[in-house]
Length: 399
Image (cartoon, rainbow, N blue to C red):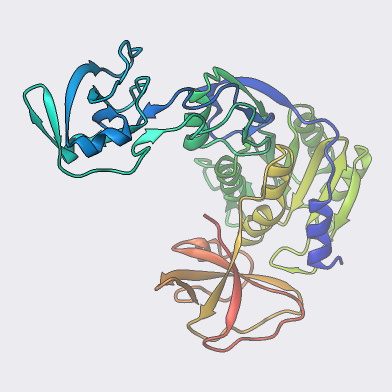
């Protein structure tokens, strides 16, 4: 079996030959990844602009103590008058600065007496004047290709009058669960050997959460012909096919054979990993098949480790999950000579992360309830040992 870090390096080094892109109306692009650089085509502001309500004047005239209000300069208009010695022009936030003025004194710093202002508190030269290009300059790259679009990017692009934007398409992920014992939601149980399928639903939620487009194909029976047809049909309409179950060494584990017969190159099969060592990643062109274990906790963890970065990779994006350092509030027992991902409770106190295992059960890789609560995954390499209270550990954040 492959070392966990080697498997991660294989995913990291994947080269996508042809990214899928499309144009979207700006407000529809939220959550997508930019497929082009956004470059300013003008200066902002294009002219010196007032940053406050006040009076535009020549800085040297403040020494006079009293200035005549020559006119008013509303926002959105082109200043008609010029500031000349001994005068000022009332100017509002966002207004273009009148010619001749180099400073704006706020209304709080003056007292109005008829058609004059009395300077109560002088300000430095250039005060409250936004210079040309203060926000951004023409030709400046403001948002780099590969950036995930959030509300700040929407705001900046709207200020540039970007009506539609080129983005990477979110990959379509088909989800298949194999197992003759599995029951769909709402399907009645007819004998004790049947179990309720949860894998396909948690995988759909993971795909949605981490910016893929899920295609739920439900459960398929454990026979080779059914799996062959289902996987083949799924690949025709998706970028990634995820299967759960059928990749270990049992008599009825057909997925691994089907993948090879469909002409996919197996990048790796089997990783020294707990939970979920029976994992397979295969590729054909820019399409991928990800075979995950059947146990619910195992398939969830391995989906986070391998499916999530694949979804990001197909969008030229960045892996959304990150690791932080935390301190143990109770001992941790290392149970396997493998890379281990253990559900834990994560808390933040006085700027430091802390980990405990309250209500987390120790048992098989089927205990999905361990993922409930303020959960994160404690990460230990295969070379690490058990830990004591206060030890620093690595934690994978899921949010």
